[in-house]
Length: 496
View 1 (cartoon, helix red, strand yellow):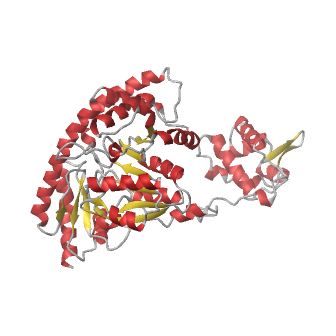
View 2 (cartoon, rainbow, N blue to C red):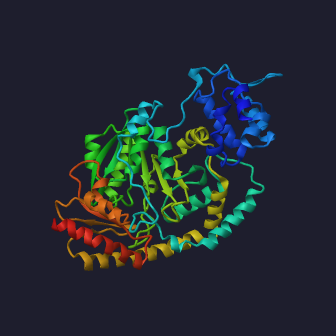
View 3 (tube, one colour):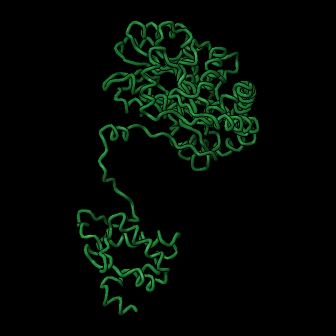
């Protein structure tokens, strides 16, 4: 039979390797299709060459004729072969060398698709640390073991029932969730808004991308805190903005420097309630100065309310937006750090004049989010579970912070000096002068720690050297385990 095929169709020998290479791929027809497709694209089966008949190939490969016929039909439908009535099947003569591709190389790939200048710029931005859930002492991780899963499941079930009759879509987000958020912010953060101003986002990063793209023209200046959260660098660059890093002190963002040196800035991005990572709070005097600057310049302030819920020495502070009588502040909040990092839900509170423009852009951007998690969270909040969970977590994180400070003092004495803060989910510990925190963290990551170097969050030098240690998501046993891994590494670096 093979001799007959070789005489009848000179390229039939090209199919016999399929017996070794592709016959284990399931489904079988897909394996044979891929095999023949690659031989055609690589020119092993030249344009115009005759293929074995379906009966011949089925006999050669010990397959059913129906399988081979199905493969030929798929190849014909995609233009790889053509069938001539009474004469068999042939590789399409229209497939010239310019249409063919080489087989995919198993080795490293080089980029052949040209990226935009904007994409190339993103490669120059400092990369974000990758987070792994098994890391210990990782900052910004909530107490996942304390999350009320049964109550959340009840809310998801309730939302699923609502979805049965849910046909409307609002680019701003589900009305039920926006109503709950507006009520919560009014009661706890002193924010002036109604649900029409609340836009739901799939994480705070999406909210920043949207805000910067709507507010910035190429070359516009953006005032940011130094140190600060590096995750906004890409969003500013992507919108064509120019980041201007302004130092902070114990009273927060240095408005005296910012407004004197850069009065023509277009936008300010700040964390007035709790700077990340230092935990400093913007003073009332500077808040009023910043609002006055925005009023005079016709500029906008983006208020990222990082960790404001977890203030241990009193209730959360009034948001900057609550002091704003000119509607110049966009307030940004997230549920990822409060509840669960996998809950990619955040929100913006927009000035009334920005609601319609942002709504239009959101329609072009992604058309809105899935209704199910939004409806579930709305029910979770409406039943009081959200507020109850927050109160419990505030007490828990205060206890865990106290334990971390106690253990650090016992284990490290004056090698690590706590930079005092009144809340949050991590602690900043300063190292002795001249110690390279990045080198220490490189070693701690190798043993499974998620500690971050303080200098990483600085944009300009001189950066302070220290360790940013998370405690929110870790009980006493895991805090002990993490510090036990840190101790020999730190001692080694301090001695060398």
